[in-house]
Image 1 (spheres, helix red, strand yellow):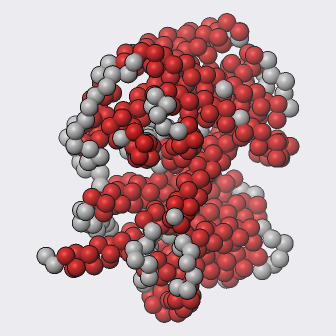
Image 2 (cartoon, helix red, strand yellow):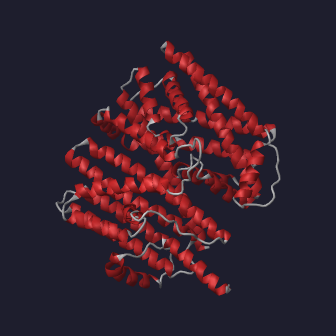
Image 3 (cartoon, helix red, strand yellow):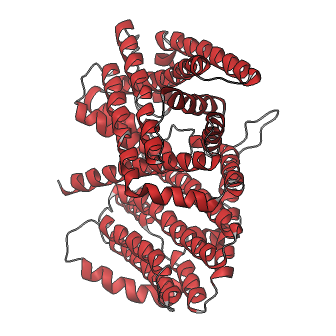
Length: 544
């Protein structure tokens, strides 16, 4: 085959990654606006990523406009959202003119498209909740936002896989789906997003927010189920359920908790916390630094600490976002670290670090359980349950320790890296005992730093906690995290465990839910911080 023809095909595939064009609305309306703007931008040398950011900002402006005092707030919000989609179309037009488009743009556009639609329709649901004061809207918003985050991760995974195929020189294949899938994808901004935005604007101008919201919520549910079922092969015998169902189980549990709580008390407590919540968010810096040092120990300090810190912040952000059982950022960590010490050593260190992370989690759980049994008076049944759970956690922790010290992590790392075509030959090196013990010590210290966050949130909620208060909350968080590890980020489970601990300590369970929501917000803020840091470094490197 002619090489020039292959190059043209590769360029076509690359352009398709960042384009989201087509459809009757685009042909008759959108392109008449987007193409002239894209041509005008040709004279400026800047990354189209900035245009995508502007598009996201207009979606945020659309949400903010919803809650304005003006009687035309709803139509203005719809028009802002439509303008956001038009700017996103300009991004696709402008990126097609670059040769080739920035590689990171495909991933960033795909994720931001879903988030923009998720933000707008979630804001619309909150707007309806304020207007009608019906909890049904609140639960629908929680479920819709959860579906949106799941779809974000799915889209990110698929784009990542396509990027790897293109880098490996493999042909890009089209995914065949149901005929109704493209139309439902509109409501998550995956296909013909200008069409979906125009429909939303028309509904807003016609003052029909209720049918628009339920149409989007229903479409979001069907598209998510379609994405979950797509690509799953039927297997004989028992097959592990998709992580999505554990994820939704946690969301439903969170809705049940909120249903049985006094929302006014929760809102009042969170309002009283105010900007002081930033102090609770800041406490996460303590264990981030300590855990970074633990990874640096496994890397034998051959990678600059600043780079390791960057890897921890950005990699763990993707671990929290991508629906891969908290492992979505590990390949990314290997990729960045491999630039300093090689792929085999980076892969081995990352896998060892992950195993030690699991080991210290179970060990810390056992320590907190035994301290709770000593410090807090508990009912006999709960005492027995915690005692058994603590012993089991300790046994599993020691078992993982033996695995880490064996050659298993090395063999698994070599197998995985070969499968991913990161390398052809792999040289195994056992983990020295001093490095293992040092990494375990620092990761245990990092987990102990979580007590600082618990103390800060107690103070923000107006309490003066004692050691028993800190230990019991940490115990329930640790043991439920170990038991319900299949539920991503312990959604719903963590909030229930904190409320249970508050009940035992004699505090209002409603404040326990406020406690859990503050911790949940901290996870989101640090995840966004990590993604923003990755984006910023990508923009800087693109200018060099």
